[in-house]
Image 1: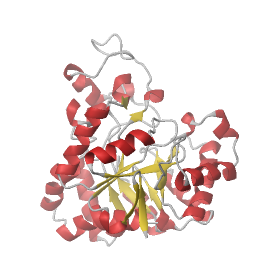
Image 2: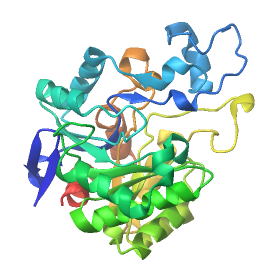
Image 3: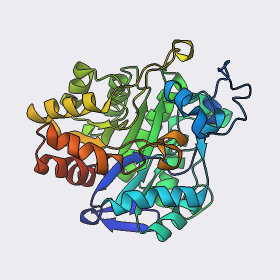
Length: 345
């Protein structure tokens, strides 16, 4: 069995320490909603600089510039921190409509020495083109299968996973159709499915049920972003269904300004709480279906802009896990064994 990377297949045992859900290049500016900001008259054009980091800590979406990164050398430098900390594989979950770039990721893999796995498919409904909305699940599946077996976006760079397939706070029929297409593609290719769920909802239950009812084995499904509010019952239900869940917001710790809160966007959890919940799940025998990452998707999450970077779990969170009493063997399972089991086709 093997894992498909941007440079070709590798053996599962060669994945090593894996961050299971990141973004190396991304364009999220479609989600920017301008609002009045203190001392910032031009949030649509204002670049991210040190003097605005405080405001961005209380609303990461306040500046359009924070919602994208595409500078190759900056991203290369950021990824090398992860490599130097012992990281070996990075899963880039960027899908159609939010800046996916196969050729640049192939170059990045060559220049950093990291294994990079890319995703096939479509993000949340607000990014779906009219063509996607008009497509049948079978048509959507055919494109995902082509991306997995032949190449993406006019290249011969093949995806290694399906997703992240997007589900927003208002779970619409276009998103359900994409999930049904993903199920068809999964059954044909064996590729696992990453499912983006709006972090402040429990829509992962419906998404998982759609996939399972369509014939996807639960252990081929990962429900992402479950650690924003630590809804224990929700997480345990997903695990008890047989799905993977992903703690992928390490490093995102924010109290969001009241004026910025809206449906589907609220306060962020803290890493200490995430580690406590991980310990609980491991202690109750549920540690074999958990993946970890930081889901780096904003400039302020990069070291260059004052964030913790892609190596945050390896450098900062592992000592917290050790202090909480999580055993080294369980840490290896979360960072090495579980990803190998999930991403191996």
